[in-house]
Amino acid sequence: MGFRKDLKIKFEFPKPLDKKYFLKDIIWDLKDSVLPAIDKTYSNDDKCTIANHEYMVGGFSSMFMSRNRVRAWDEPSFTIQAGGRHAPLHPSAPKMEWWKRQAQICRRQ
Image 1: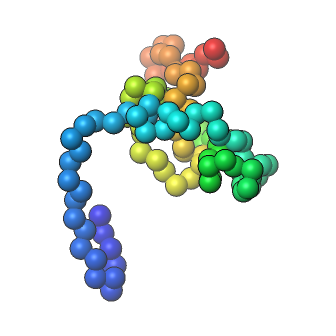
Image 2: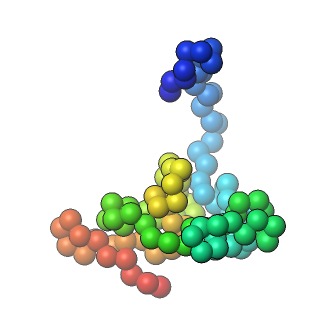
C-alpha cells in the first residue's frame, strides 16, 4: 500500500478479525432490494431504497467470462474491483462447472 509522500500518510495494517465472515453475514439483508441500473449504467438515484444498490446491465470482459466469478452465500467474497465489468456475480447465480480440461460451462437453473 502506498501513498504520495506529500500526503504524509503512514499505512498501518488493520488488526486481524476474530471471525471469518461470509457473504451471508455481510449482505444477506440486501438480497431483495437491488435494482438494475438504467441503460448505459446510469443510476436509479432516488428509486433505490438503499443508496447505490444497483447492478450493472451490460457486457462483461472476455477475461472475466472465462473464469468462475460466483461465490456462494457461505463463502467469502472475491476482491471487489472498481469497474463493473469485473464485479462478482450474485451469490445465487449458478457456478460454472468443469466441462473438460481448461473449459467451463455455466448452466442455467
